[in-house]
Length: 393
Length: 104
Image (cartoon, rainbow over all chains, first blue to last red; front, side, top):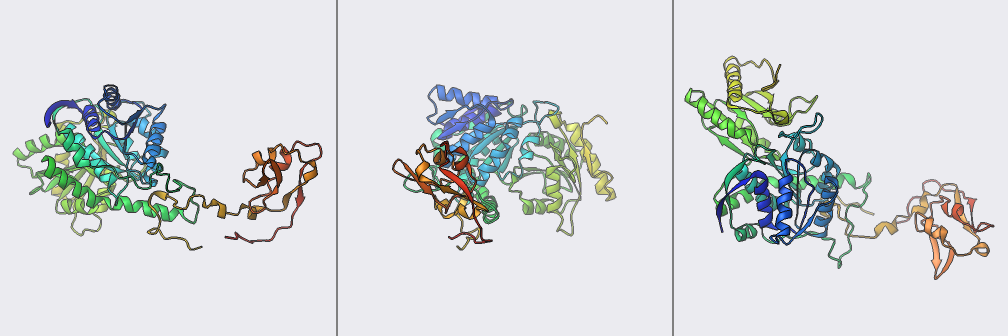
């Protein structure tokens, strides 16, 4: 039965996992995603899920179990964060290279050193070239909805690529919200039966999974892998439409908030977008034509759609909750700046790194960005292309 | 053998022709020496068979029968491991031909 439930971000992922009931769930608990694994273990103990629950000795092994189970022909998921995702690193690439549609819930958390348990995007941004599809969630409802859609996207026969769903550590993972939990049967129906491709457990057909490739085949296999994620935009769109028709909540590659007549805009992902909306509402009452663009899909990067949405603006500030030391700006910034390169008319663009290690970002900080954007729009000059927000300088 | 382009390959690096490594004749890797089996010394302990990295020891029933030179890389492990007083496998000089390539 469709119900409203008070759940925190971790519980929403666990709740979706219970409804989906994958064949195998393999996970190792790590803050702030521990409660996902803990709740799933409880569901298993209570007989509420029928799939196998495997708790191996590390995240590297958890992803390895997922790879084995997915190769065997099962629907598979995991959950982790931060160092856990980092420990999965080599297996992430293998999951993507073998085209296994594993779904991972990630409670985004900073990476050591210095050790920190709070939310930022360093973990998943570090995995941005691993070949996984990336979906990011502003709140618990989006985390739930994204997690359900992730299976449909990854499992589509044209895609067959693993998907990670990011939710901000603590800010979303540990905050209780009343969310719409859909009917168990409706969720199962939305997902449909899992269709394995070349399952290892089909003993009628002899296959080899993951054989060695040297200079003669590696390149072709990698190109073949890229095709999967390049097919994803169409599927992401179709799945979102069907999700909207079925459950009444609509999703795109990004959300535009008060962008129709905006002259300047802030681009920010995940939970900070919620605070940003409040800041924009206040700034609008002060007469500033400002909007928000909140990316949901980071891989595959919707470069064309995003550039179309931003090209007419006078100034854009891209806010990144991770840094890419030594790079020409943080990850989201470099993507967007590059996407705008081919447009003759394009906005001035700046980058702010914010919230590393869970440092709070408040309405006043967005207002600070807005005043800088206003100045850039007026003067047409960018004094500082890459800066930091709410940092003691 | 024609190599597939990326569109012709099965997804996920799956090899639908499992067991095709038999076509990889690792004997072409030999360079300079090869093992020679001396049957009269052999006690059929199977050490050579156990240690051979390329399954190149020929066996029939419970008897060692010699070397499969299609796959023997000439590493010499069999000869080193052979426990008989008078070695049952000795390494002998082999003239190799440059760039003979694989037979398949």
